[in-house]
Image (spheres, rainbow, N blue to C red):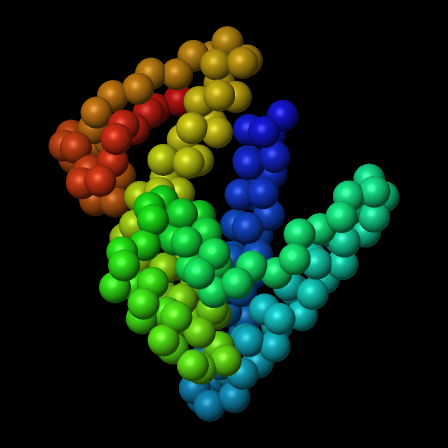
Length: 164
């Protein structure tokens, strides 16, 4: 059940990220486009929140309160980078007084190499569980040929990789 929720959540997150980064129409002047993109992402987040809230109410589940800055920074690093943040990263985030610091941290982590590695391993785990369940099998190795431009070598920071 937990792995199904994880994979479902990852699928939803992928849709959100893909819709937020997909450019529609010809490229225009940089001014105005960033604001439009932010409004689109905000509208999509509100729509997802409405669906989640409706499901929580349907199941009589009380949602947790918003996380404080210390908890948020730890969770977002674990979720997006697959690691706990360094003390210096936590201090830097806590000392930042700008109102959009959470959004900027998420954007920073989404463009990091840690995000790519972490989600590659996460999706492979989900795929292998499904493959094993359906008896197609799954083989794991220490290298991931072709992943991120590598060929037959161990990726830095990667515990394992699998081909399903």
